Image (cartoon, rainbow over all chains, first blue to last red; front, side, top):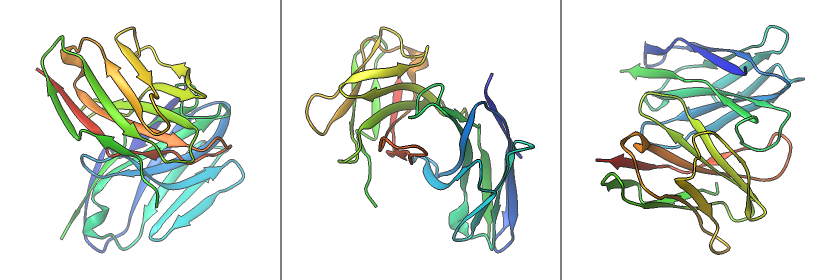
Length: 116
Length: 114
């Protein structure tokens, strides 16, 4: 069964500090891995999409890594800001196209709180 | 950046009532989806829609649910007879038909069934 596990479940850090969120998956056949940011009461917003051949991708202060051999990904946030407070969701896509039940497997997310 | 818009943002209804959640996907997208997220839980897939028909649906999407694209812009989710356990945030999403396509989510409709 396809699964995505994220850790930690929640994290509190001080503004300006860095942090790393983890994602482990057992999804087959693998197509790509996505990180989404979800503000409270809002829809998820895409941060990065990485395919099998990519092992790092940056979007501003967000850097995602992917190790397809160990089936692990991380999202590193540099110099955190108060606006980074949100849930960060790891989503792994199989070779099936689209967003259907077999296409996307969602993690439960890491709830990140940035304190001033 | 283009947006998926959803209305209403909040909907309160009595158990057994019908509700219609509305979505306007991004104009050049061809795939449309509904997801839901129960408070504190992960996002769950409901249904995908392409070429005016359902292409895939989950076990959550039973006979009480239906989707429609009544015109060229709107995409609706109808729940015929709501249950308490239907209370959740419902997200519409759309994407282009390409490999590694980016999914764009709306801001959601918070449905509360009393």
